[in-house]
Length: 276
Image 1 (spheres, rainbow, N blue to C red):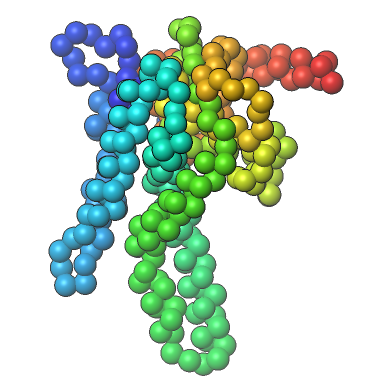
Image 2 (tube, rainbow, N blue to C red; image 1 turned 180 degrees about the horizontal axis):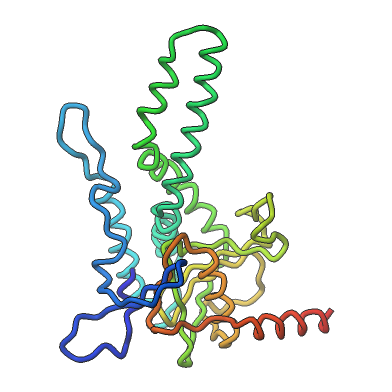
């Protein structure tokens, strides 16, 4: 996936690299995609009597292979995507949503909270804390369990949206991050307690696919063309959202990514107010 965000100006004879920026505002670093976000046994299940089960990692790898095949044969050539291909894309997009550090931390916090509640109930009834201990023992693998359960559910939500691909045909490029799947809904602010409902028609899905193409799952739309040329301001606006949504890292094909500047945001807000 990240190979599609490498720097096109990489010198001859050097392995392709992408630029990494982090929230700590340290200087951008360049790295080969295969060395980015690597963690041993992140999806590996430790079996009770020793040994390891790699089925989750194998399945995720197969989804990525399917995505790359459709990307190269259809999307990069601006060819229409049929329903079967969209199902395969949706499963991969769902994996992008679920296989992040932030999702792992979310499920660990959720089960830790559950264990605490159960433990308090056990103490209140003066019973042995067997159930709370069982839940806490499960916490290290909770993420691996949930990624399987939520994969198909998330894919079904994606399939409710109309598939659109935004294309940048200028030197302005899309960025991605360590949390590339975004739900977008102008009716819900990022700070809102109530998050944008995924199945709402006013909620769109945004996922950068390459430095020049992004997926945009639209809840409401009358247009029939799957491929739309994006204005530079659209790309910069999407990059702005991607940067704000990242967990820790931003990935770009440029050392200086194309973001919305504060003056750009002020101009857009002014145009929006005037339009109303």
